[in-house]
Length: 161
Image 1 (cartoon, one colour):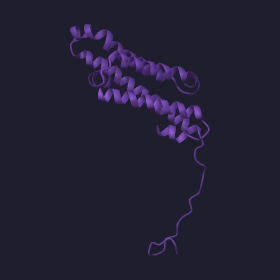
Image 2 (cartoon, rainbow, N blue to C red; image 1 turned 135 degrees about the horizontal axis):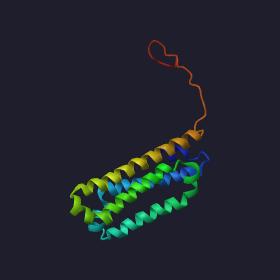
Image 3 (tube, rainbow, N blue to C red; image 1 turned 180 degrees about the horizontal axis):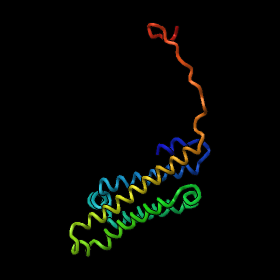
Image 4 (tube, one colour; image 1 turned 120 degrees about the horizontal axis):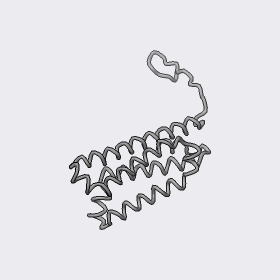
């Protein structure tokens, strides 16, 4: 979000929109993981089906990738993004498909596998976005160079003399 704000008005509207929507998607994922929104809040307090909430989040993520496909492929180092998506997919696959069999076979280690894949996905996602933000900010000329004139302080500390 900081990088999007810094790029706003610099003429790179595509980079601004990419970083803005990346931060909004990240904020939702953070909120969902922190509050267990799709598992608890949406189901118990809003009466929504967990699968519907997950499907909407998945559609939003796919729409994000489609809208910014050319930007991602042409202006970012997308291999780390692919790793993040792979780890997130692995975590979801373990949670939805393998959980019933894993729980019987390896017990509570299933949570280690699922959350470990999710943690690796989060680390790759963070690395991708931080690197992309740095790359985009480094390529933009945000502030003109300026010189700072020294202030002559008198004995009493009053710079007006």
